[in-house]
Length: 261
Ligand SMILES: NC(=O)c1ccc[n+]([C@@H]2O[C@H](COP(=O)([O-])OP(=O)(O)OC[C@H]3O[C@@H](n4cnc5c(N)ncnc54)[C@H](OP(=O)(O)O)[C@@H]3O)[C@@H](O)[C@H]2O)c1
Image (tube, rainbow, N blue to C red; front, side, top):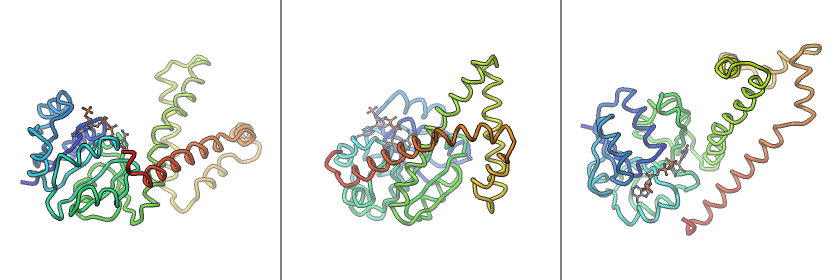
């Protein structure tokens, strides 16, 4: 029977387990023992096994998912020895393939970036570099994007942060509707519904740029155009761009200073 090992049972790997079981994965899932309460909840609710130590996870697993925080990496590295060629999927943001290959000598290291939507099998699943086993096991968590070079992967990590930022934008828009008197649930439905409309149109028409899709709505004389003029006058996109630059800079700096972890 296939066996998936998880080193670092945290917020993200918990969602991965939920998504894999939801997709019908019926192989073994073995967990590292730390964060015992969360591991135990996964064991009882999602048919996982909590191992006595990290090395037992490695020894049983065909593929390992690494889900510790970057600052815990060196501690974990000292606790395990992987088999030559064993596939290690790292979820760690900002830790490059070079660092992983040095830390886990002989292992086949792959970087993956995904979001909490993995629990609903609807995450963007970015894989770098291409790896059949990693893609086969993690593909059911959502939509695969396979990248060959790490500089693209760092940009994909910035895109993954956008996922978190969008919630704050959506919250502000919902709040505006609430402040004008709409009940929170209706305001939420309207904001999410209009976002969904946008996503559907964009996905159905890949030949059109996102800007062209917007311009087709904000034609001269429309209310959309009137509001857009205000947005363009005080472009929020500049602030978002600055946030992207800060994150990319932090990722690249982190990649160059492995000793910080
Ligand atoms: N959260 C996200 O949305 C997201 C998105 C993309 C990528 N990531 C990446 O995913 C990783 C995990 O993030 P997270 O938010 O899920 O973190 P988290 O909730 O803090 O989970 C990390 C887990 O690893 C455990 N751990 C630490 N050292 C360990 C060791 N030596 N052996 C076994 N387990 C150990 C921690 O246990 P203790 O609590 O006992 O320390 C904790 O349970 C990070 O590297 C992050 O860059 C996260």
